[in-house]
Structure formats: structure tokens, C-alpha cells
Length: 87
Image 1 (cartoon, one colour):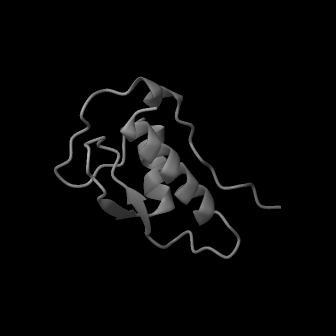
Image 2 (cartoon, rainbow, N blue to C red):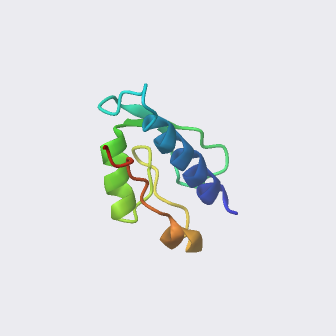
Image 3 (cartoon, rainbow, N blue to C red):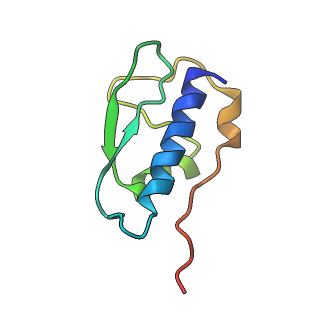
């Protein structure tokens, strides 16, 4: 797995945590930059809804001025994380 792929997995976990019953889904959450650069540990504050929009567009979460290093083959396999249906 590439560094960018690893950050996507971490961000997916953050997104799942944002869906927990006690979490505020309207709040901004800290996600990691997915640029893939060695030594990049930038955090980006976005809402879970903004995160979902990036995933729908198959776009990485990037800090300002951080382009992705290279196209990542496993980015096409990212799944949109949706909130569970309410009963």
C-alpha cells in the first residue's frame, strides 16, 4: 500500500467514527492530507459531508498547495462511506 493509500484508510476510519451516535456530523473533523509526500502530516478540517463529496468525485483529501504525487491505482477502489439509514 502506498502512503497516499494508507492516509485514505486512516481517513476512512475518521469518517466512520464521525457516524457514531454521539458524534456531531455537522462539525468539522480532522482528516489527513492524502498527497502521499514523505513527511506530510498535514491535517485538513472538513465536514463528513465534504469528505463524502470528495470520495464521490474520486478526489483525494489535500492540504492547500499539496498536489497528489502520482495517480494511485487503488484510489479507484475507495468506497463512499455513508451514514447508516435511520429507522
